[in-house]
Image (cartoon, rainbow, N blue to C red; front, side, top):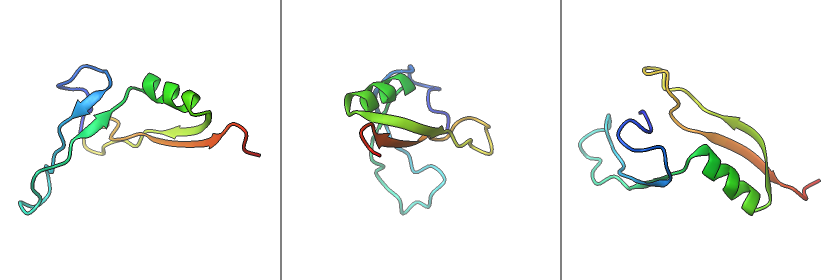
Length: 77
């Protein structure tokens, strides 16, 4: 799945997809896309400190398939 192939790189709602699943999966839920800058602002706003960020790659396309954050509150010991 390429994130921004048919949308601009900006925050916003995207249509979901069950592509690759059986026909019994119907109406996919929409999902909210955030840019990395938007995620950073959100973490700062909620006083979170980003400890680690990973972007697992799609094995077929070699493109990022997701992003995983590990964060803590700034006042955590």
